[in-house]
Length: 274
Image (cartoon, rainbow, N blue to C red; front, side, top):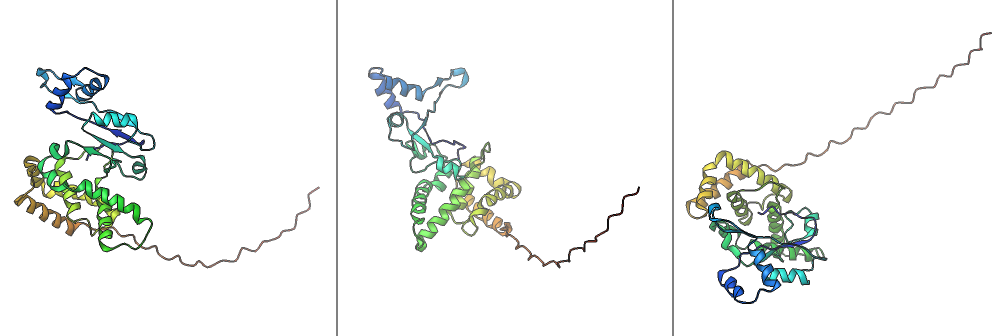
């Protein structure tokens, strides 16, 4: 869950080109485009004393009315390996990071993810894109079949747990656990408004009672066999202690007895003393 936030509609892209692409580029004349591509790939080279490697630049582009087919966005996208498209409408509706999963692309794909994240989030992007498409059409009609209702309900809960507070990075093992819970139906029984509280209390519960599970998942970065069974048992145990908050109905107002206004006492003005 990257903690990217922006109030404006933006598109960002970061990349590391393959060696074959870099070799081909180096054989042709140094045009403005190839120079800008190299600058995007290697903003700074680290010395061997510092461990080697390079830093990658992330260009940030503001689009006009969300149009990513304009001249500048298409040129930058063409020389990078993906983009994160941030949408102002999502930001204003409380979805932060405001990432449009339909227009965001990663040509690196899951190669940069740990194995456990690949296992739990394989279809997450497609499911979210499908949910937002259905949510747009659902506004125009109330007769929805059961499968569509389930897709919308699951998408709403998944969107809630993907929200991230500013300056609150999350360890990868906890990301894996909450996505596992959302994609495997552990949140389906709770109202959407309770999902954020479920997430926060789940982390506290795991820190207090299942710290060994978190540590093992962080070390192995793989979710299979006994570790999966332990995670399912921990989520089932948490479901027994997590209580949904219900609003208490307001007590009916009791009628107050009206008291007659106090009688006005008229007093005669005393004659002024001479």
